[in-house]
Image 1 (cartoon, rainbow, N blue to C red):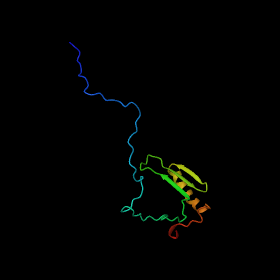
Image 2 (cartoon, rainbow, N blue to C red):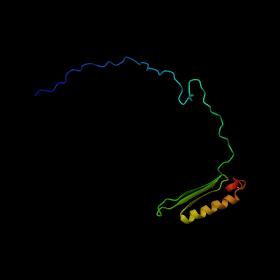
Image 3 (cartoon, rainbow, N blue to C red):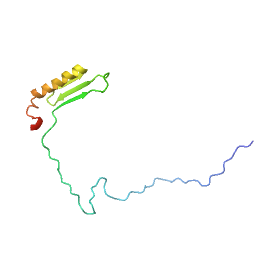
Image 4 (cartoon, one colour):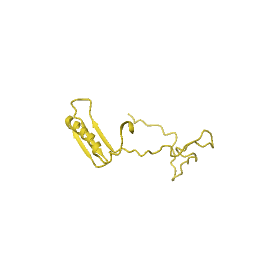
Length: 119
């Protein structure tokens, strides 16, 4: 039984002899460059349209309470004055919520901030 021979290749690809330059893209508009309705029509964008009213978050309370009663809830309370507390468990989280509310009345950063309808 003789070995099976493959027919010779029809064409051989010639590899380049050295480096060559890839085709360069045509210069166009920059990415995310605003375009008007028509060429030459500027967009009506007002700089600084959002005014800063000076309000900043000062104290945070983050509670993680999964829907399942078998999972233990946790909470984290912190303030820019340096107050920071963490709690794990139902009773401890309830105490932390009360302590966070108490901190709102005693913190020097929060006493000047009005809440409710007056805000």
